[in-house]
Length: 460
Image 1 (cartoon, rainbow, N blue to C red):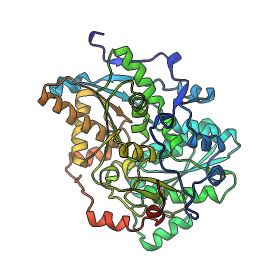
Image 2 (cartoon, helix red, strand yellow):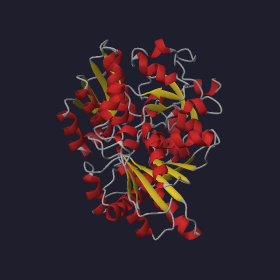
Image 3 (cartoon, rainbow, N blue to C red):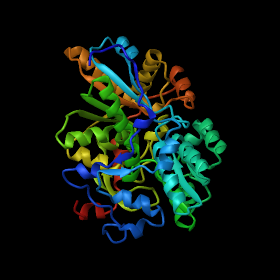
Image 4 (cartoon, rainbow, N blue to C red):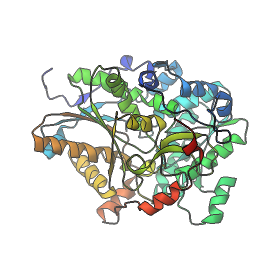
């Protein structure tokens, strides 16, 4: 198809995908099993039942390529899906690059990010099994606000443990959750054994996603009518997000194009996987090839500096052991503004794909990401979330490489959310307050010293 100057590609509502794509069906070898920390043996459905409804547990272990999206979930999706695919012509011009740049814009959701794609599904499956309330953690607040909204839609209660540094940095995200009806606590809190233990050791703790997960898991595990809900990392969460990439495939067909490079920011891995997995599936099936780049903060370098090992998903060691790239469950990152990218581990499926050589990993500094976000805003008009700025920074790097090499490659990245509730971060950037932070090797070594011994004795 000739370039006709079109900027936005909208799918008709009738073409919104009816199934989620499960990459497990196409992997050349399965990822290592999830292990019970007490026995070192693979966990079964009964082990996970205190935390999750059975429908989600079955999705977690499924190897079916397609899993149907329930109609009540699709009905709620129609509030904001399909989301647009946008050609970044303003950014292309500003960079004077021969590359074509597209972004899938997930900031059109009511919560302002990609997170409702799984929040809506999780709330539905829990309600169907009679769950009264969901407990969860949140970093920057995008996940917490999405789950709070989803619980409101399905008549459920929601309790959120928000990482202390983000609780203080992002009061509007907290207010948003409360408007949707959620109860929000700064984590670590005095409400759980896990939180009290952290505060006893460090009363001024900034918190971490690992600590907040421990608190939410404790609430779920000690109340029969409460389940735990996670916004990233686990297989079923990444599965729900693949509606992003499936829509993008259809929209790129409308554009007569296909990406040479796919880019996504990575914290736990959900928005990256949501865009990239359907394309990686094509690559694994030998249909079409593409480079795939996962971008993370240099201050929380899970993929680029963390070993591939079994570790707990939370600080208090209440979760099963999963094999992933990790900085250690005791890792507490600095208070950088990209709060959604401060998790100590990476989704096991993404970690596995990196080990298989199917994706690349890149770390970028905080100032470079905000510089990229400001350039993008001035060229495209959308102020991105700090997390999304990591993908933009890498897209700009690749576009400038294309310029240097005289190559007209097609770049696709996920603009996972807008930054309207993150303006303090931009204020700090413009004022010169923000700093780069390279996590010291000795600090990482100290955190990794606490890895469970099963990691060195259990074969993958």
